[in-house]
Image (cartoon, rainbow, N blue to C red; front, side, top):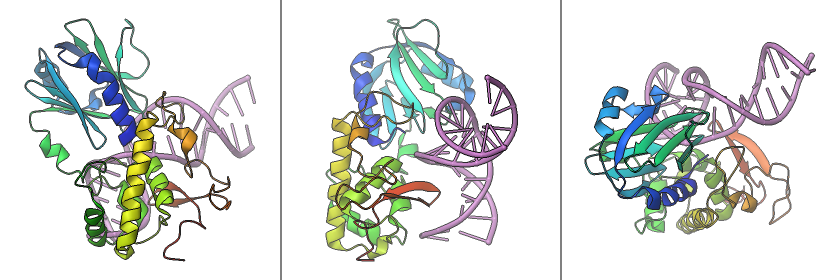
Length: 268
DNA sequence: CTGGCTCCCTGAATGC
DNA sequence: TGCATTCAGGGAGCCA
């Protein structure tokens, strides 16, 4: 599942290949991929625009064009890459071709991914919480944000309006790194624990990026962070700190992995 | 405000 | 072997 480190890796990979390219045309194979505007208008509006920059915000890839911004959210199974192949692959939902002949492919097996073409990307991105790797993401900020809510840490960290970019993998890994229980109520987190959690989130995300993200299932290949998982997908395996079998539970409708010995709610 | 649940999708895993 | 069922997972939307 592409989360912040995977999206960062993908954005970095395509940036040099796409900068200054001019779009000539696009093929929409699954209309629902286009979240905005209507498919027909999208197709017209994107034509002839030139790529000026590529950035990431949360789990969104932003492809800045000279008129609009192309926002891409990969959701569960999306991938974005340059292709030289003539025939489309299975699950190529959107293919954008360049004047130079290059083709950018949005491939998405489960069809959850979405693409927007808008001159007001802020309207979509302003719902997001702070960037966890930015300078503004201090322990003090996290502490005040946590105290302003009364929610269990796991579902709260997954909430993109709280912090942008964490998904199921990096949330579980961050909570383990911080030694905090996924069940813990955010309002009970102390200042010291906020420091731990901020440091843990940044450490885990940075390590993810260094490893080009994680490759799990058949989705997204190329990353190596899966070799460094402490809890994610390690159900029943011994905790690397204390040896207790890693537990998997359902929390907020999401599979949640943690060490019941190392990750406590203030001793409980 | 919070939590719980459903929906969108496909492919892998499991059951018989 | 083959068919049917179940499940995972990000985020929107709905309801309590």
